[in-house]
Structures are given as structure tokens and as C-alpha cells.
Length: 343
Image 1: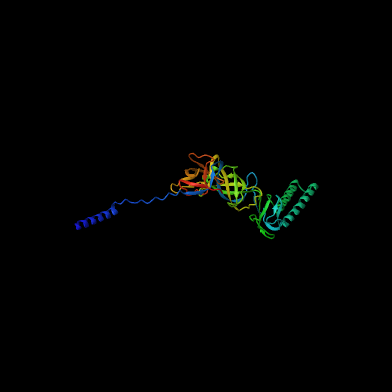
Image 2: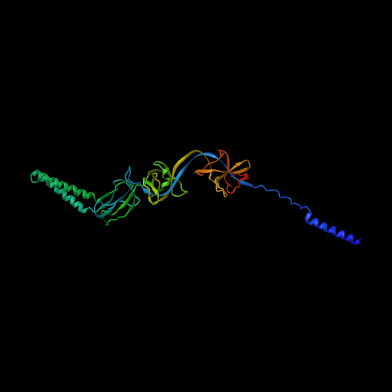
């Protein structure tokens, strides 16, 4: 009997152990409460604006070439060979048109004029006395005029009003017909000569407004497109475009500048700050984050013109006045709770 009781106890113990191992219901851990993300952002309103496209190019300041006016620069070269006697100007000096700048040695020309003048007077006297013919007098007069012309050519005057930018001669220098004695530039008639890609030429017309800057942060100067070359450089694929500079710009020939020319215009379009437009990391779409209440929702948009910190946008349901995330827009989930902060 005792053996039977002991066997029953052992069986009960084993049954209890089996129940604990295989049949006891699992105790589920309590799920942790889900934490909702709250992102601090700054916002701005979608607005209606007039935006412009721009053609940006880099160019060099040069004197204006000949057109409706004479060229704005000139190289001074003698019309006759000779020796420089005196220099009547200095570099940086402003001179008027026709001002005397260089005098060549004129002693030989002076003697020739004096001789021709005396011969002419003598022939006129002989004509009255019957000792010379009218032909002889005319020949003497022609010789006098030729001598006077040679004398005049020893004087080199300013062909235009401007500033002496370079002086390359000094008294005593020999000069022939190819010798450059000085350079003069009208600094109030300068242009920027830039190369513009052929693909952007359709945006340009003569008379368009332009901005000229020495650097990206510099104060812009107003200019006007006055020439667009009809010829395309086959190697570079660019065409020459010239923009006039305002008088008194303080820029100098040879200086490199940036030119921005206003192209097409989109009036009354929807626009947002540049910071509001981002690329979605997953899809690669261009998106903005629209804010309604405390929730920001990603919206796919098509960007357009960029002008003065604004980007033209178009997309389904967009309206002026809607709020978009500006600061904190990059990396936002497609939908998220946000807290708007003030600047």
C-alpha cells in the first residue's frame, strides 16, 4: 500500500512539473507606450510673387568698341618716323580730345616749311614781274602744303577724350610707324564682354537689364545688354555678349566680373523660401512639408524659377497662405507632429 501511495505522489509531482514547463500560460510583458515624435520647426507662408530667370556669366571689362560712337580706346602711334622730343602727359591724366600729347623732333620739318614758304613767296613775286609762270607758283604752293603737313604729323594729339592708361615712350626714344607711344581709354564708356552658352541665348535680347558684380557678395551695378553676337564659337559652344557699364563705375579694363542678365518672367506664381524645398531621401522627389494644425505632411512639388531667395512651386492643392516648414524641413517623416517656434 505504501508503495502505491509513493508512486502516486511521484506521478503527481511529475505532472505538476510538466504543467509548469509545457502547459502554464505565458505571462505577456506589458507593451511600452508608443512615444510620439515632436519636431520643433519654423514656418513661412506660401505666397504669390513675380519671379525672373537669370543668365549668369563671367566676363572681362573692356573699352566699348566702335559702333554708333568711336571706340572708347586708342593706341597712339606716330604717322611719321622720328624721335620723341617731349611728352605732354602722364599716366592717369584725363585729357580732352585733340589735346597735345607727344611732340616728335620737328627741326627738319621746320626747316622744310621755312624753305618752302620762302620759295612760294619768291615765285609769287616773279609771277608779277613776268619771271615765273602760274604753273611754277602752283608747284611752289603744293610744296609748301606738303612741308606743313609733314610738320603737323610730328604733333600727336588725343583722338578721343579719356584717361592715359599707359605711357610707353620717353624723350629721346626713336619711333616708327608701328611704335605705340601711349594708350588712352574713355573710362566712362566701358562694357563687360562675356561668353554665354548657346543654350541660354534664347533668353537674351538687346536692351535687357543686367547686374554686374565684382564678386558674389559685392554691391551690384546696373547695366544693359547692348550686343549679342550672331556667331557661335564651334569649340566652346558660346557666343559673345556685351553689357554696358554705367559711367563712373570705378571698374577698369581687364577686371573680371560676374554678370547676371534678367531673362523670362513668371507673374503671380506660387513661391516658397528656398529652405522649404528639399529632396526626399527615399524617392528623390522634390518636396515641401505643409503644416496644418500640429501636423506636417510631405507634399511633392515641381520647382520652377528661383529668384531672390524664393522658389516657384506647383503641386496638387497648393494655395497661397498655406504654411510650409522652412527651418527643420530636411529629413522630416512623411507625416509628423511639429511644434512651431518663432525666429
